[in-house]
Length: 210
Image 1 (cartoon, rainbow, N blue to C red):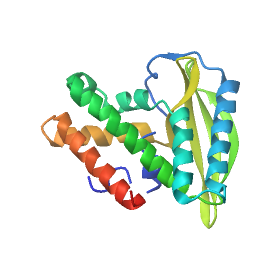
Image 2: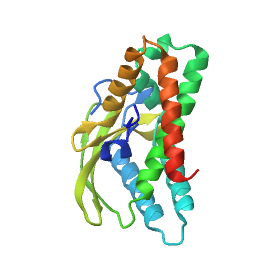
Image 3: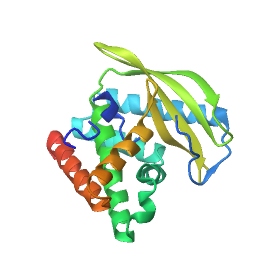
C-alpha cells in the first residue's frame, strides 16, 4: 500500500474507458465535451508554464482548475463500488473527504511538475448518449509524448471529467480494483481503506513539504 496510486498511472490516479454510466449523467453534446476539455487542458498548461508562479502557487492554481473540471464525488462513489452500501454514513463521509484530498493533492502535484508541457486535441467520439471520449496528446520536455483520453459526462447540467484513460488504461477502474483489494485483504472493513488513504495523504504532504 506504500506505493498506492503513485508513476505515470499515479499521476492521474483517482481519475481515474468505463463500462457503467456515470451517476446522474444527462445526454452529452460531443462538441460541448470537446470544448470543455480544450479549455480545461489549456488552463492547466497555462498554470503549469506560468513563470510568475511559485511551486506552491502553481500547485494551488492547478488544484482549483481540477476541482472545477472533475466530478470528484461521483468518481469517488464509483470507485468505492459496492462498499458504498456497506460503509456507515460516517465512513462514507470520511472516505469522500479523503478521496477529494488525495485526487487533488496527487494530480496537482504531478501536473505541477510538468514545466514546458504542451497539450493538443485529438479525435473525439461519442461513447454513449451520456458520455464522450476526448483524446489529447501530452508532450513534455525530455520525455516521450503520451495519449491521455478524457471521458466527459454532463453532471447536473455541467460537463465534468468522470475518468481519464492513460494509454489505454482506465484510471478509475484501476483505482476501483486497488481500493477493493485493500478492503478485501482486511476482512471487508472500509476503515482499513480509510487508514490506507490517510497514510497516502501523509506521504503526499511530505513530498510537497506541507
